[in-house]
Amino acid sequence: VMSLAANVLTFHCFMEGTKRLGAGLAGVISGSVPLMTALLAAAFLPGERLGPRRALALGLSFAGIVVILEPWRGLPSEALAGTAAMFLGALGYAVAFVYARCFLTPGGISPLGLAALQMAMAAVLYAPLTDWTGMASLPWTPETAASVILGLGALGAGAAYVIYYALIEAI
Image (cartoon, rainbow, N blue to C red; front, side, top):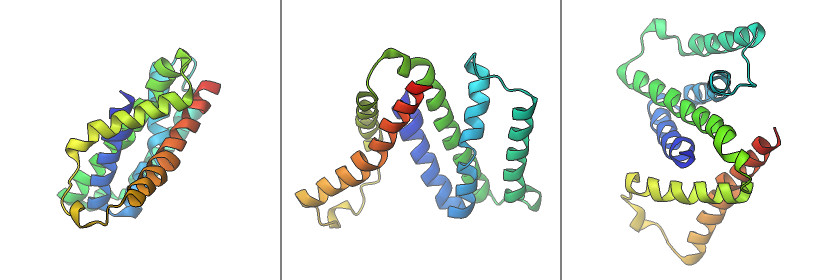
C-alpha cells in the first residue's frame, strides 16, 4: 500500500501534473499534501480532531490554492488534467501518511526496514510503467548505476522515508 500510494501513484501523478502545469503551479498544488493529510487524519485517526480553528485554517489554505489557480479564468483541458493529477498525487501521499500511522509504525518494524521494503516494492511496481526510450544512449557504467542508486534512491527518497517512519513512530 505504501509503495503504491506514496511512490508509484504520487510520483507518477506529480510528474504528469508538472508536465502539464509547469513547476510553479505544480509546486503550489503539491503544497496541499499536509492539508489533505490533516483532513484524512481527522476522518480516520481518533486522536486527530478537526476543531474550528483547524477547519478554518484548512479552508483558507485550500482557498489560497484556488486563488492562485484562478479557475474562473478558465482552465484549458491540459491544465485541468495537470491540476487533477497533482491533487491525486497529493492525496496519494496523504493516504500513505495516514496508513503508515494506523498500520505500519505500531508494528514495531524498524524505520530502515520499512523504508527499504517500500522503496524496493516501488521499484518493482514502477518498472513496467517507466518509459525506457533513450536509456540505451546513457553512459551506463557500474559507477553510474551506483551513483544513481545511492544518490537518488538511498540518500534521496530512501533516507527521507527512514526519517519519516522514525517521526511517525515518535508521535
